[in-house]
Length: 265
Length: 301
Image 1 (cartoon, each protein chain N blue to C red):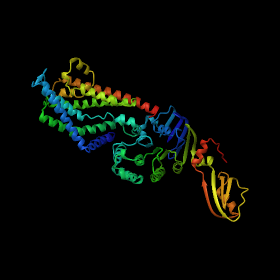
Image 2: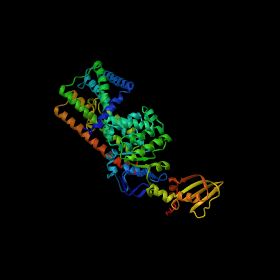
Image 3: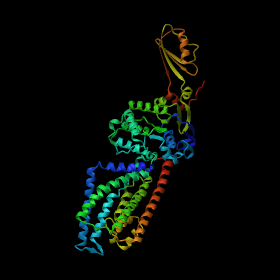
Image 4: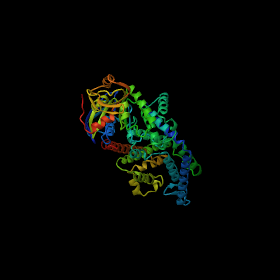
């Protein structure tokens, strides 16, 4: 516990620090609600009065994008945490402090995510549920498994960013890489277009990427579309990606640090 | 505390030295002579290309975090704070990092804020500060956790005289408490006032390492004495002077203090005439350093 103390304190500090930017925050909530309503109108037009296309009801689709966009606001990752520090040289200062730089980065992000969960996700999803409506969770145990799977989904999203950030040891500008990464996440994770509507060959490809583990796995659990063994499989895949991406990130970190101490800055 | 064994890195070549605990060392030398490299090797930001470095019996680049809890390192060209946050918020981060109790933090923080004068802008974000303001806060941050080893790279750059004086006082206090100090600077007076040992780097090799007093005796033994006298001009024939000059009734004597002391000179002159005023001036560290850099052989005894 005492080992964790600084990190918990940083979670708290990051959480409390956000309450200073009220206007920014309200605009953020408004933005999420607007995006949800725009998607709702698009899908209503696409469904053209029908309630079901290929066995996918419009309620399932609404549930997908409302929960995905809600979670998207919670799943906070600062893609430029390390790149900024490597760029301006303050990485050297942080390396000499007696706390883990990664632990501090995670703590900062978690504080942010907790704040978003309470003050962004809850109001935005509440408004959407009130005016659009979503499917109820399949049952209570599925709701719990959904929450657990969403937590792992955040883990996958975070470790993708973690590994990508390490590239800044070798690249002067990682902006383009981060942008490409985020486009991949938006399109291939199923948050905009549910993966049900993707052609089979594409779903086959996506199965071998970490992206569907972020939002789509938890969502399918929520809707009760997965059997018990499929849920277990989903968790294992999420876990697999977290381990793999974290290992890649740590490997690159070691290499990058070596570069720093050998070449200096 | 710090051991360098045959260390080579960048410009540094075959540097050997041992800095015992509690010593205050001034690291001097022209720009590009390897001062910053030396300090970065000491705290583990660089790895020696050959040889080995030990800081507090640890290999620095493998024990950075452990050393970090006992060491404060400041590099003039490395940002120390999070730019977007306020000064106070940055200090609160350090409070968390060093696990300081509330009362201890408050005591240290307010004392440092008062003495280094960053209290007035503690609520401003770091990016809004001037260089001097930022430096004062950064040096305060460095001293906050009372590290056992303090490494400073050009700490006084951008500081005004008041802040320089406060910093010197603070460092002297820490030194009395047994803190080991390594300071690199171009400012010889600064170094001279704080440090008892000197390491002189020149093009990456250690030209001198030892007591400051000894360095002065070897390389800057000259003293200048100005005597105003009334009465007859004293006879200076037998005195081992380097040279002397007379202007009206003011006599200026330059001599090597290793050969003759000011007391001996005075006694000799007093015996012959009446003295109305005396001033003496030792040549400083900068004189010694420039003589070493010019490659002069020292004249000892």
